[in-house]
Image: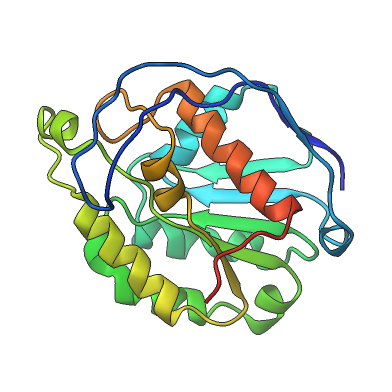
Length: 216
């Protein structure tokens, strides 16, 4: 596996308990991380990220600062309907690390996401390293200013439903908890600053290269 390099990490926001309202303070930290693939991860050649506007933003924030083996498939406003149309296009992939991050646009669909994920072709699930990245947090106060009613409590409920019910072939990266307890900043309550987007990417790569996944 080639080195995955990102050049900026996210701005710091110290927050409290899961589900609380979150506020940005804009305090930055800049760091460069280089992750070497572990032996057990070496069989997976390349990453595919599949998601909604948050992955669109991550792609834009990363620009050209990623390895050519990283592909990002994403659409703003995407939910389960888009996912069902798009996912079959990667079913022929083998030996990839594939990270899914959808749900913030249709949190009510948790059980339907579980059903769809679990009914993906067996060969696809067994011949790739498939990962569910938790839906990441919102800044409730700032989001309310643009009419967003999504709450962190709803996000936590969605994530827990998938954690408890996804097929055993799915690994899990809990960026939601990580960024609530550490660092994140938003532009509108829902979408992130470039530093936070790159922080999400960096943390995901670190978890994959170190095989550091949520115990399920």
